[in-house]
Length: 131
Image (cartoon, rainbow, N blue to C red; front, side, top):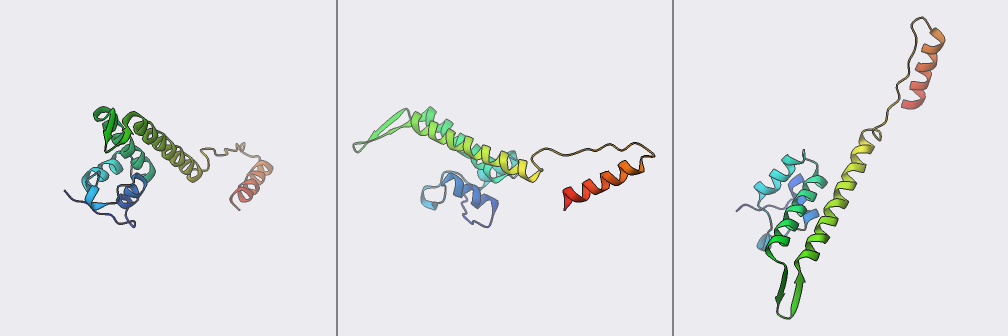
């Protein structure tokens, strides 16, 4: 069982978002976190969302309601909270990716052959857009 927590790595960032930061009570092994990163194309927030979904599905299946030392944990409520957190991380990743891609919108201008005025106007517009 290997466990490492280094915030300069993508693995460490996933662990931070999942709150899997304590060696003595680790949730995932390094290989598992790396697998989440691989499955989610090395996008940290998406990998963390997948890890949270994995925890939520396991929690929901194995513990309906646990009572220990007069404390109670509602397994399904914990699972719902984890799924909501996973959804939030995916939304953040979507917004970041959209911002990186120019909000998934681009401009395509058409210039007809021989239209020198249209060509100059297109070049001027391109300079204005690109700064």
